[in-house]
Length: 248
Image (cartoon, rainbow, N blue to C red):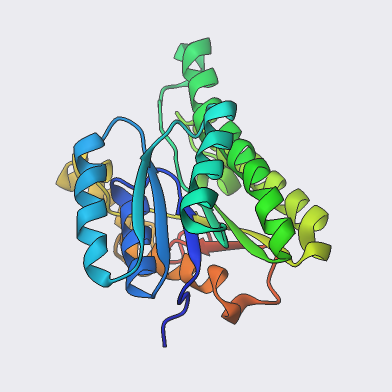
């Protein structure tokens, strides 16, 4: 059974890491995939070519999710190309880690703009086509640090905590239109970013995880598939923590 067969999904920040894994699993499960990338043009073009092998419609767009006007233009382009947007996955994000006493205003503003404002921009833009269709699933990628905080990540933690409040508010506003809004909170996931850690750092991280291993992009993609599909038709306003038990 293909969980999202013939559904149109828009995924931000999909040229690498978790976003790429999500795009691949949705294409495998029958979805038509529209995705964005910003600076990774070659990776974006390569992903478009790779996903096309699954036989669904695939198109990549170079777009800045944190730019309000660009987000509107993106959704208009996707609706023109695909007909509508059934599923939105807000995944675009960055880290600019440092202790609060050393954090510049720019480091704070950039992380809040890219991680949180982008979620507002895209969600607002897809509301119109989703309301017209009287259905939709919005999935916001947050983080366990949005739930527990983390030293050296005041900006990142604040942005991810903000997504949680936004997700619940949207769920309450749009539920009567059959539009669901949920969040996925990854724990320690192996990506290009975590690949920069040395073996000792990796061991320290995995010690605190009951399953004693890092997660994979596929683990997050599977959580998104559940929240995008009819399997979760009565689930909204929730945060699905995918962290191997780390937050317990």
